[in-house]
Image (cartoon, rainbow, N blue to C red; front, side, top):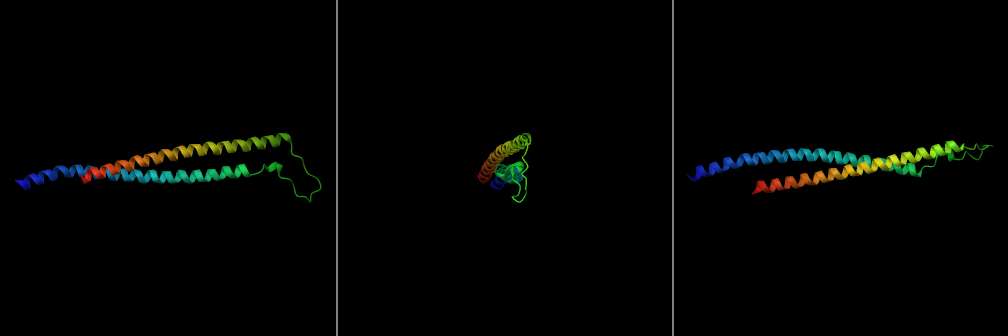
Length: 129
């Protein structure tokens, strides 16, 4: 009688464990995908951050003086100088916007990873009980 009862108990608990194992497996696959996207987002962030830094540090092309060996120094047109400056500011603003967007996405992914970790841990603890 005890063996029959034990067998019934094990047969009822096995499908729940199998469902838990399948869910953990699915969560781990999702976690791997999110980690890859998170890493990619972080790499994009670093690249754009460097582009922005270079753009900020770079002088305007028109303002670079010619070599001292030349006889005459061409004076850039004011309109061209203003246009170059505006284009540079627009590029810096675009990079800043991209950085903000990537930072927000990275934060979202990190929060998703934390939620998945917590869910996996709770499922594993539940399976141990």
